[in-house]
Image (tube, rainbow, N blue to C red):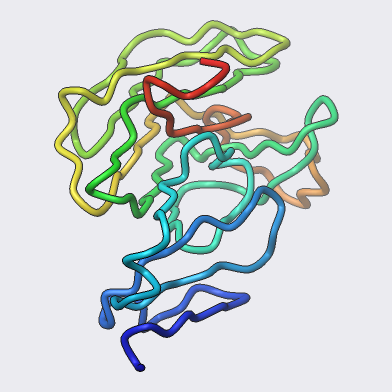
Length: 192
């Protein structure tokens, strides 16, 4: 029956919202996404809401983003610079929303940067992020954040124009912080 269809796509599906399709999490490193239309199939399958998956280091199907430079390798792991004003819009399951936001960020090669972290407009953190050769890992509670079908994460920071040819860049880039990972979690997630 039409209401039980499954759609698999190698790119973002422009009709997903209009048809009330739910995005099912692609596995880490996969280049496809699975959307379920309302119906019997969807009612029988659990909807995974991005818990534990590393966001921000590479573009992901179903996640709208702005303010990120192309991904590059940093210390043998994928990472991306922001331009000082980056955001991710992540679709979540309202019946099973994330409760924690974990951010791994780094300000290499500078003294540090002011950083503001927001979730759906609520300020989670606003302070100085000192320069470190390794990522700072910070975990924030989402208890006071109103979460519906989407979570918008904003990372606003100081930014510098780099003259360095990093990741093959041919011209200077405006660099904010380097993101090594953004993860949405629940309080009962293993390994927390």
